[in-house]
Every structure is written in C-alpha cells, then in structure tokens.
Amino acid sequence: MEKSIFSLIFKTWSQASMGTVAVASHHSLRGGHR
Image (tube, rainbow, N blue to C red; front, side, top):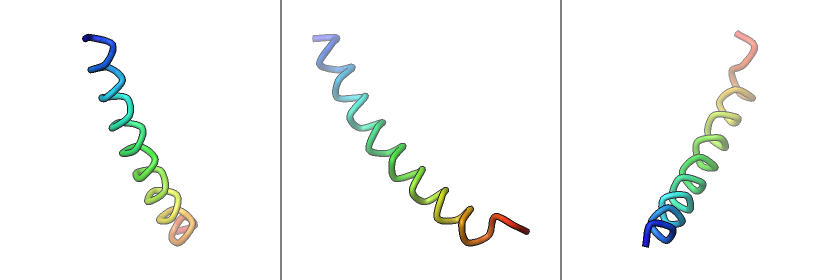
C-alpha cells in the first residue's frame, strides 16, 4: 500500500515539476538577460 501511494505521489510530482520546469525555462529564455 505504501508503495502505491508513493508511486501516485511521484507521478503527480513529476508531472507538476515538468510543468514548472517548462514554465521556468520559457520565462528565463524570454527575460533571462535583464
């Protein structure tokens, strides 16, 4: 049971972190040299 909960959390976290990384890299590419 613990393992499946961890798997679910990891899946959610990896999706969220991928979205965050995409947004962050987009912003830094557009306004990084300020």
